[in-house]
Amino acid sequence: GAVVSQHPSRVICKSGTSVKIECRSLDFQATTMFWYRQFPKQSLMLMATSNEGSKATYEQGVEKDKFLINHASLTLSTLTVTSAHPEDSSFYICSARDSSERTDTQYFGPGTRLTVL
Amino acid sequence: QKEVEQNSGPLSVPEGAIASLNCTYSDRGSQSFFWYRQYSGKSPELIMSIYSNGDKEDGRFTAQLNKASQYVSLLIRDSQPSDSATYLCAVIERYSTLTFGKGTMLLVSP
Image (cartoon, rainbow over all chains, first blue to last red; front, side, top):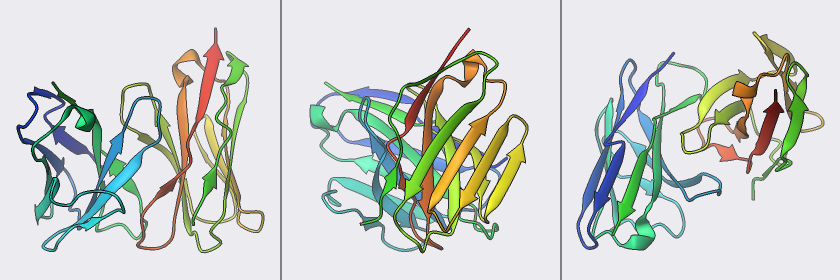
């Protein structure tokens, strides 16, 4: 099946620093990738939709200047949490849609656990 | 507002039994339906996808779709303790974003 990787899997940083998370589709091309956030015992929350070569579309309430998304190639999207604060601590998960499939199937990466001290 | 409803559970079944997970959705334009499994602290893993009315079987899993009733279900036969997880129902219109339910926690006791 389709494989999506994320790096790093876990990161601990100090308040005020920026953290970059990479999402890669390993064996397929992904025109569209998605970034989610999940707090403990809560549902997945879609943050933004990332389309290759264009600006990301952010969901209501998500600060685009704080969560910078770049989708520079068909296999790589990055999420940068700028000036991170403790309330940004969460589980960040990306997913990718296989461009070759006629379905809308999304494959999820393993997630990145961010802890901001 | 597109909604996907699931019973939060937990749904408790003994090992070897059939687990039945249910989901209803509000958007009649939904065309694709998915079941994801999420273990605690892990990301969702695709279990089944279904696109047309009826049943779709894959190993111990059977997905059932009834578009007229806006209902999709997942049956897990011969449930195992390793099946204990949260099961997320997700629906999507064509070229849109997934709408997830809040998930049903399944507990399979040995």
